Length: 157
Image (cartoon, rainbow, N blue to C red):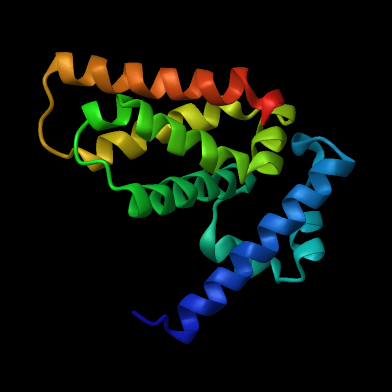
């Protein structure tokens, strides 16, 4: 499936913003980075940023969602139980090894809780039927377990 030039342009914009954000986060705190600085560093127009995102936080949420969607496109767990299997959890770990800078950036920016929120949304989106309370508890337990693996062990990745 080939991408349209519009999709390619959007990917370039997002990648430019991502690189700019992590560059700026090495220099200063996330909260002190302005959208103006971000777009200037990324080399895009401020209006382009706001066409895609409401603010910096919505951009970070979008990055997290994209990573989760890409991971699931490769590993495609079909059930909640599959997400608890050692094989799947090890794949999550190996994926994290490829995203060290981003994980470190989230932690240092005090945004790791955003990952947990987005992971909860992501999992609920994957299982759109009306879940029982037990299934939701199971699902949120998984999200919490993965969150703890990632953010309590991030210094080891």
